[in-house]
Length: 124
Image (cartoon, rainbow, N blue to C red; front, side, top):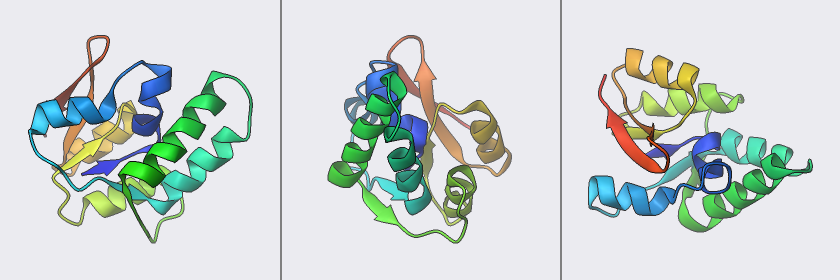
């Protein structure tokens, strides 16, 4: 399962307990993967100030502590997610609508926010 930048920022920005929600949805210890470009994007965003910077800093810590970081040929975070999703990934966690649409067009199941603080699966 791949996580994108905004998925890792959800705990601060949307008060969503992402990892607990993933456990609830999938009832299994999934292999959580983050593309290296997502980590770089989080680090860049965390250099700023305000809520976004805090969310990115927390997201960066979560990626380092809870996920396996993998290399990607693509350097832009969303493109790296799409690239890696094409390699047989079961799910991608994102709340980014354009990215979600790209993934669904490629037959990838997407996990995103539903309601205020719950995650749900969208089938292609």
